[in-house]
Structure formats: C-alpha cells, structure tokens
Amino acid sequence: MSRTVLTNVRTFAVGVDLTGNSNKIELSTEVEDKDATNYASQGWKEVMGGLASAEISGEGQWEALDPTKVDDASWAQLGGVGPWSVSANNAANVGDLVYFTNAMRADYKAFDAVGEVAPWTSTAKSSWPLVRGQFAHPPGTARTTSGNGTGLNLGAVAAGKRLYAALHVLSAAGTTPSLTARVESSVDNTFASPTTRLTFTAATAPGGQILRTVGTAITDTWWRVAWTISGTTPSFLFVAALGIQ
Image (cartoon, rainbow, N blue to C red; front, side, top):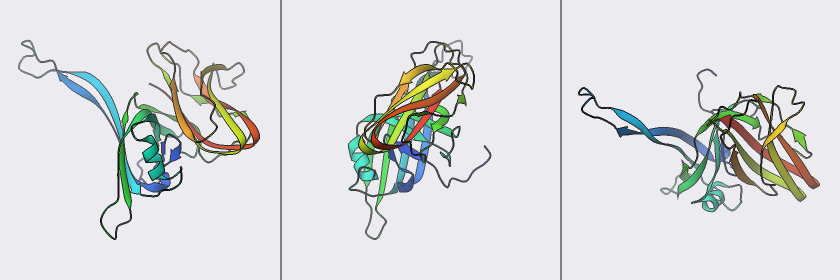
C-alpha cells in the first residue's frame, strides 16, 4: 500500500459503522518504558518494556435517536468492552488491511458553540492487544443464506501467539433472523477439510464480538470466516476481521 490521503477511514465500533459520522480517527499504541538503570549501565539509562496499550480516538458529526447513530451507540457502549476495527481508507475487499482490538468506550463528549455543526468526540481504550490483520468479510455484502468467505493466507500460529477474530453485525432483518459465524483454518486454499477454530455466539441483532485462540501452535496457514444463517427471509450486513498477534 502506497502513500495515501485519508478520505475514507472505516471505523466499526461494536455493531455500529461510524464512517458516515466521523471526520477524524486516530489510532495509537505504546509500550511503557520501565527504568532498569544500574551501576553496570556505564552511565547510560537502561529501559525495559512494560505494559502495552492501545487507544482509538474519534470525532465527527453528532446524530441521535436511532441505534445506528453515534449518540445512541456511544451511550449504550459507555463503560462497556467490545470490538473496534479501523481501516486506512478501505474495507471493501477481503484482504484489506485492518487494525482491531477489544476496547472499552472510555468517554464521550457532544456539542459546541452556537452556530457550529453539532460534534462528538470519544475514546476507546484497549483491553486486548491491538492486532494488525485483514478483513475477512466486507460490510457492503448482504448475506441471506449460509456460506463461506474467501480464504486468507495469514500463516501459521506459533506457540504463544493467538489468532484473533472480530465480528461486527451492522444490521439484521427478517423474521427471527440468526447468524452464527465461525473461523475455519486449512492446510491450503482449497479448504477441503477445514477445522473450526472459533465460533461466535449466534447473533439476532446488531452488535459485536471478539474471540481468540488459546495460545497453542496451529500449523494451518489458510483462514476464513464461514457462517450459518436461519430464519424467515433473513438478511445480515456484517464485518469480520482476522489477524495473528
């Protein structure tokens, strides 16, 4: 990916797409530097890495009185922990770059001076590692039947590492609609005998979930999202992201 001007940063907060209500999104991560200087440091300060953290901050135009609007979502999520996914200009295709984490909605601020377009600002602080991964399902494709996503060659999971998966259900329509998504792995891109590694709780309404494997090694190198849909005339819009950290 070459240099880019930020014109279409996609931000998904639990079960809400904030893209149309945001004009500034900042993503940061850091590791604490702990002083380990001693008499053998030869007059130079020594530091060690401490706790790591990540933060997503955003701002934009305020809207309310609908579960998909920024005000309703911010109030519902305040103090709660859920998946956040942010892309650099694109989430249209499987394989597009995404940063995602499990984060707490830490604060929310709205309104400004007379004559201004009503703004909002908010911050989410990580409870899990920040993962650099890829979209495994795009937001603009409605699903009405069970199916499988496109495979991603993310590589094997080394011992001590984990496969992370985020799911953002943006809309659910129909009578008693239900979406159960899962993460499968395979030795190659044919997925002739896939292994289910993670299974999300069945979703019947907009919302978000994030899961991770237990930390044991997985030699499979190909990964995908698959889903089972049931109900009468069901239809779902959802976003999925995968990454190894």
